[in-house]
Length: 389
Image (tube, rainbow, N blue to C red; front, side, top):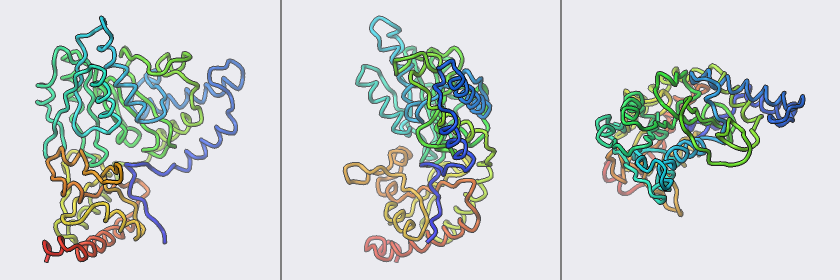
């Protein structure tokens, strides 16, 4: 049985061109990019060429790109590299307040929780029923002590976009640094960091056809970022450690590819229409107007999302529930709960995240599989059967 992939927000298949670049660099570029001999300079050239490709994709200066191991490290470097400045005794103690949202990725939420243990004050902003942070809430949350605002660009579960430009203006007016987790956006769409207004922006290669284990952090020129790692003077003293040249080269190649993620919206809309037309009591979670083009979170009342995921996998389709499994118990999504869904509604939700390689035929097959799976699961569930009799 052929399996079809609809879980691109978790990770994407490595593009063939990227794989060729990665293997070629592993074999042919053996030098350390810090070495001055021929082999080291070849590695340095490959590294800087990749830096230029990433900068071109996000609309920045190449010197503003810092290579990391992925989105989690980029988020942590941005958050700790700014916020800890306000926690040093006798140094900038006035800036120990952080503003974030209730729907952030765990890489941000857990970093903020650690800052609280270290003495920081963190405000977790709510979202509306569409999954968006209210600009007025940001404005009210800002204080003279706010040193960092960290709000994601697009949510990984719902695809909902946040009002990043407006938040950036407010953060800067309050004298705060603005970090944006752009993992679900960067590399998929052409961006312009100056227009977006962010100071720090996280990137992860495996979300747009690159390999796992490589990412980047955009650091706007002049942003006072402290390092988390200590060693050599790599990445202009912002991230110590010998650079992962093959990974960085592959990341640059992925950034340079012209995959049209915006066009995926046609398939995403086809999927939603088909499911809503054929499956009773199916509801799309999140804003229909402010979201990235490939993502749809749909809840199916009366059925566990995990059961749907398993049923679809048995039919050859890979999707996600968007729930986190902890100690053997499936917890309802913190994102959906923050949007006002009940724990039961959150547990009945499934995330479909498409990619540029998906086709109409695959989408149509998925619609049929969803209809069959949900119908079957409702039939064998006593509670659901009573509700949908």
